[in-house]
Image 1 (cartoon, one colour):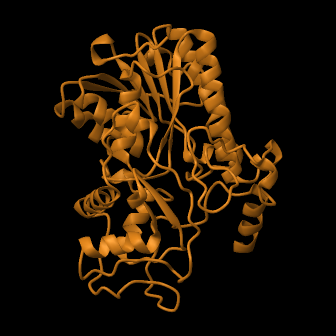
Image 2: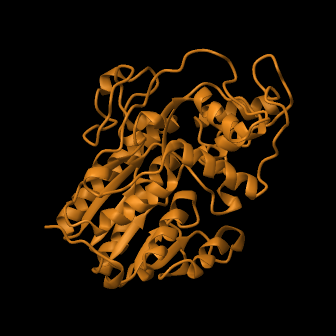
Image 3: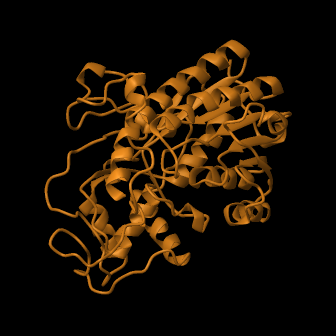
Length: 389
């Protein structure tokens, strides 16, 4: 039986509140009157949290900051006490110094087990929204295959390419498998726990999330909003196919989920392109940025060639069941770029052809990919470190 909540019912908690998606969740909740307990790594680190405190002046709701370490048992006991809803956006992505593929997996499932211990101890939480990923949806399939909420990443496991076997041995050395597996395993775990303990859990699976940055700290390596910044600075990246969703839609969806009277435990929601206009190869993103910022050297594909059309998925359930009115992909691109420029986080280059690609090295450094990815195969890391000595 559905048990929707609203701001009048009591406080809610958001994990990973200082992060890009987490910050937008907090902002949306405050604007709609919720009392939000914002969980962060260090509430005293104002460079990461000042924008959250400022949200107390942006809506009918309120924000209080709470230092919580998701890897520590009992870290959320006090924060969750009396809460009616929890939005779990914190995760180990693999892009922090010292990360490993195993830490990525443990930062999902193991950490969420600890979080649910606190949630069950509180006894007041009626609804949990877990920020999963489209990595938990996409599975081996022909080019152009359309994924839905019924798609899971562990389908067609026998078709996975060499080196990406779906097992714990691979988790220890392959970040992509570790991330997909932990999202799948964690989603199923929270749904089972919710069913067993009398609350409702839901999953959201975002794809390429972009849109405005709420803090300068949101320009982080290997984050899609930062890749837009690289393009503004004239850095050409390897080809990719974008499936764009606005970060504000990711946040609004989570609130709409907990307020909805027509959903039930285990419902999951793909957060993806609203229509075909949100599916585009990277040179189409470049074309939009060129139109928005004429006369600037906007980066595109490092080397020309075709892009595989995928992943393909469209907003359906979020619109038909929750009533979300999604923002356009161009709006997400524009507001992402405008915020980077407003924060002074990118430096543009005059001249439309003034951008770096194969055969045209301008010495531009990537902020999206500034160094070796932290969560790589530990054996490979040792080999690379040995070469540097």
